[in-house]
Image 1 (cartoon, helix red, strand yellow):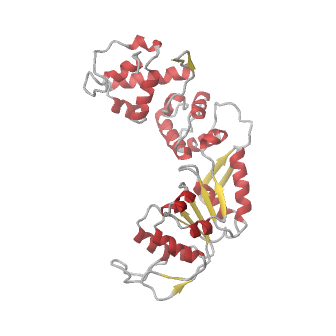
Image 2 (cartoon, one colour):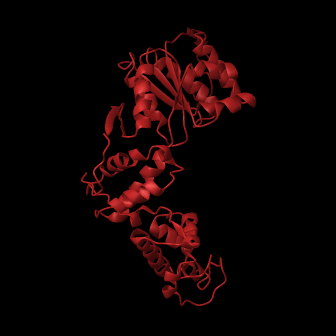
Image 3 (cartoon, helix red, strand yellow):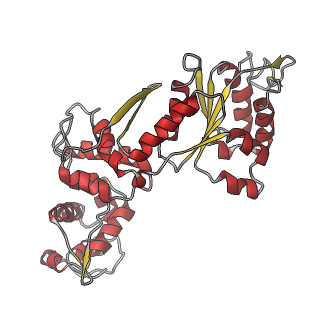
Length: 353
């Protein structure tokens, strides 16, 4: 993808990991993947920590990819996606007749991962009873399938991940300390996106490259990405760029297509808009005009949430420059009727929020 942004002064790394692509340019991620490669060559259990959406699964796949088990099975499961009774049967399997609907025996994920790697995502959501059973298996104790009479022994490397504070969960009695120490023989921490902004440009290129029009991303859009705090991390970035590519319709992706809250400098108590922010203001005004001032429909038209639109209205509300757009009928703030909804637009047009 041809980018109109300035040439990057840092080298971008690209790794293909079991069907997922990792791209990074930040020193933090480069150090993390160097450590991951060293850890992968051991047989230690690995616990991956990080906020939601940072890319913990990519790191887990890297552990398997660089390990001596790379040619053996990779199996993954989310411990938070299944209720306890289903998770138990998924992990340990069952025999015919073990419960209603068990018409044939089924091997569990531990058996499927034999000699390979089992990735337990969202390990912090594991039920206390399942924690006990998992600990026994990790200690090498054979187990039974549900309804079974023959013990199963497996050789599996465990990689687990969570966005929870497991140490605090241990202190609060919600997570077993012995299981925590068994899982955390090696701990890898994935930094949030706001701490590795050098990765924004290569990630943007990766996420936009999948579109047929192969859209460019402008300098202004990259600047807007760098100003955002990314509470949803890489997952949020991917969603923002998906929406932006669709909004751009094959044209270069600009800041106005991103739908991000605008962070502006303050001067003597007033907000100062640059050229890119004026474009965003105009897009909001247009959306409010087209929807008759209806906040929810305007937000949907812009591809942002109503809450984001409200923040923008409050941010722009005290700008003298917006007052030229005023002139709608008086309405009560917060109303959603035909008149009241225009209060949102008047905030943009110069009314103090």
